[in-house]
Amino acid sequence: MSADETCFFTATEQKTLLASRRISALELLELHLDRVKRVNPSCNAVVALDEEGARRQAHIADEKLVRSETTGPLHGLPMTIKDSFAVAGMAATCGLEELRDYRPREDAVTVAKIRAGGAVIFGKTNLPAGAADHQSRNTLFGLTRNPWDGERTVGGSSGGSAAALAAGLTSLELGSDIGGSIRVPAHFCGVYGHKPSYGLVSTEGHIPPPPGHIAPAELGVAGPLARSAFDLELLLDVVLGASDVEAAGAQLRLPAPRHDDLRSFRVAVWNDAQAYPLDDGYAAAIDGLVDDLVRIGVTVDRAARPAIDPAASYDVYLQTLFGIIGAGLPPPAREALLAAGEVAESGSYPRRVADAVRQTLPQFFAGTEQRHQLYRAWRRFFADYDVLLCPVTPTVAFPHDIERLDLAAQFTRRLAVNGRTVPYMDNLAWPGLVTVANLPATAVPTGRMVGSVPAGVQIVGPYLGDRTTLRFAQLVEQALGGFTRAPRI
Image (cartoon, rainbow, N blue to C red; front, side, top):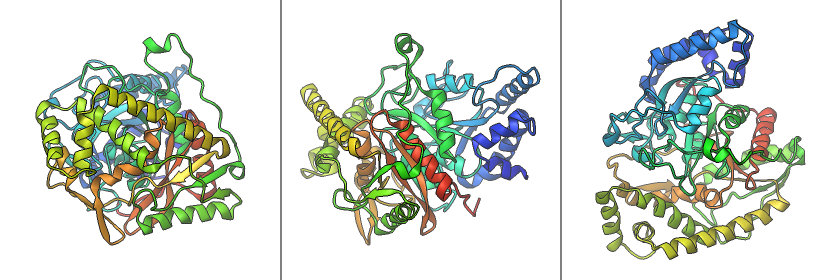
């Protein structure tokens, strides 16, 4: 096997190599560091390295194997981490100029678990400023390019994470998601990502909120990205659980997957443009995957829908999301959003965002009640179905549109869908369908291309049904194939 082939092995396969002593942790790290030096300039996914610190970690990992000591589930695996998480000894910028020199003394809770699990953390990956866009560019580190087509976005905000995996620069990645930030990059780059059920994984040590803030935000989660659905569960099992303070009085045990045979799953498919925009070419890619499932005997219902109003669901999602975002904005940025809303038409994104930013506490609580009604509706739906397949976004990866980087720029950008344009922020609709109800979703490749880039789909499950969506993804991977390497990398 060549060095590059080894870097494209799944994390599970790399674990096997390490355990069998066919490669050492230091050798595996050096292969990845060498590949970063050679390949990263073409995509700019990895934006910071701690080579010497990582070599020390790898040396310790190898010594443990020599002494036959007990090792963790990630022992010796080289990993990068999204630059919104605190990693002790490295800058944590979240792509923001004001955090250029911020170096946390402690790991984020999830990063500490990853380190305790034996991973060798060697770098940080790029993201949009403030983790607030579906394109990964900032003034500190520049633009991350899609390994499949350098003229197209990697998505965001975990864009560098997905690109690093697609380019064979890391074995696993830790991302975060409040607006599709794990699922969108996985879809755009042809890799796997899992948005956990809300509350399963600690976000303490993540930016936003600003450093020093520890209260978890509504909707926001942390979760794994990988080149295999099996690797997703490997990393999820490591990061599961709250901080030590909260964990002292509770033990987390996720329900087992509902089925262990693909043909036993009751599958619903929501793949039309009646509720949210959807490009025909992307819809056809999802239909092709569904056709494959039907051909191998999976029971599929293409008409099933939860008893919700999709427009109302999206409204309460935007109200909650931008209530959270608006509360954490610096005053000038907040005032700019409010000013844009003052002159905007009713129902437009600038007006909806401004209304969310200025909402009162009673309005926020009213939105919370609506969300709880959505939880119940989805719970009833998943009594009859095990998983729902639906798009991740309206389109596949789109061309870069980065002339302006401020948050208000997203009000003027447009997406091309079926020969016409729709508002750029429609990109939040399909992710928000899942996020607003705190549901788990596993993003997987469909095995199909739309033009020059891959197409993914999200597998949605009941609240706390993470192992069900992951198992379904694993079985699909086994039956139909999984990650494909981009030809230009």
